[in-house]
Image (cartoon, rainbow, N blue to C red; front, side, top):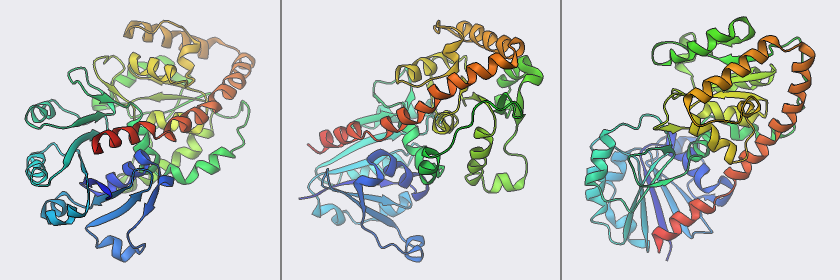
Length: 356
C-alpha cells in the first residue's frame, strides 16, 4: 500500500515548500492541470515515486479539518506535517488522533515570526519530529538551516530563472557602476542598519525597494527587480533580517539566498554564528577576506571596520583587482547552493523514518 504525507494550511506557502523539500523533479502532479479547477479546489495531489507516497496539500486548514477520515483509509502510513501555532494545532491533533497509523511532524521553515508562545504549544503537543530552519537554543529538535532556502527557491519565483542565471555573462569590475550597493530599509525595528550605513557614507549606494502602493500590493513580484539591481553593481552589502548582535537565535532569509543565487561578491551583516555556518557549508563571503576571527559581535564589528576602511581608502585599481578575484570565487556560490538544495537525502530520510 501507498503512504501519504499531508500538508494543511495554504497553497501559497505549502506548494513552494513541498516542491523545495522533495524536489519538483521527484514529484508527479496528480491533480487536473486547469486553472479554473485549481482556483476552486480544496486539495492538490502529488505523488513521490521514490517514497511511494501521495502528497496532499490542502488550500485551507478548515478543509482538512472537514475532510472525512475515510479518505486516509486507503493509505498504509500517514504523516501529517503541521505548522499551525494559533490554537488550531489542537483541533488538528484531535483529528489526527482518530486516524490510525499516523505520525505528526512540526516544520517551521520561515525562521522569523517564531515566538515563545510556540514553546507552550510544544509542551502540550507530542510531535514525532520537530524540524526547524532557525537556530532555537531552547529547543531540542532537528535543524536544517537551509530549510528556508528550499522554500524561497520556489516562493519568490527564482526557480524559473535558474537557467538564465546559469548562462549569465558576469562582467568584470565596472567603474561606471556603484562599487558598493545595498537595499536598505533602515527604520523602526530595522534601525540597527543605520549604524553601518552611516559609517560607509557616500561610498555606499542605497535603494529602498519598496516605496509606494504598487510595492505594497505586489511584493512578491518586486523580487524580480533584484535581478537588475544585484547584477548591475559591483559589490553587494546585504543586511539580514535579524539583528547581527543577536547570537541566541538566527535564521536565513531570501536576502542571503539572493546574494548566493546571483553569484556576485557580497558582504553580509548578520549574527556571527550565521556567518560561520555559511562558511562551513562552503559559501564564499567577503567578510572572511577582512579577518579570520568570528567569535563575537565585537569581532564582527572590527571586521566590518576593516571592510569599511578598505572601501574608503583602497585605490580604484586595487578594488578592481580584488573584485575580479572575488567574482570568480562568488560565482561558485551558485554551484554550492544548488548542490545543497538538490540533495534531498535528509528530507527522504526523515519521511522514511516516520513511515517505518
